[in-house]
Length: 289
Image (cartoon, rainbow, N blue to C red; front, top):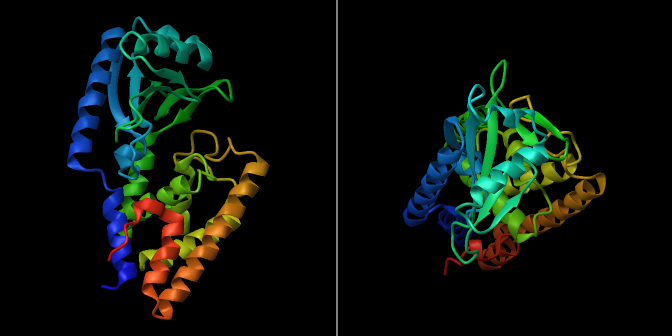
């Protein structure tokens, strides 16, 4: 294995959640579940999002927990509230136990010490949806919108299997680049949705797949990217036209770095190639020498 292949292997390991981090995340999300269930009539609760799909990068931010509220119970009136009102009620419940609670677009976030590896959890209130899936509050649209995270998870699992287990690590790498670049593409879930379509089988070397993905993503970031479950708003609906153009520019700049790195590797300058890749991944890609 050459330096570049080794560097990508180390990058893959760096992005993996450790056993200790997993245990801390488990303890915390179980404590959160107990607290919420003590104050709301919940029919089921489960982890969703990129942490559940194993595409979450470190540090662990915004670990999603879905709480499906009993539509016939004492808290059924939550469904009649506006998204702002509903999320405020959830925030009030969380503040009974947690100090730092903020309200986002579709969830309430509990934040922990930023120096730790498990930084925050997103609490998503939901109701069962007629016809399948769920409805959750969306403050931007002002409506309760449809979603089904189980569909997202199934598609990710199938894609990873088709790519010989390399798609999930690859998505983590792409998200790692996005963080290093200051998150020009948002939400990060958009990168995952794009990778479902843009990454083709059979999956090749990580460095080649990265170059091809960056090239395709730069050209198609301005496209409409629908919710994989076909229920909610487009995944990139929160990005303005200007933000999409800025993201396209950032992706093209990253593509230029990737192309330089591959050219250096082809010419036998593997250490220099690794240094180019590190411009995209930073500390997440340790030097293999």
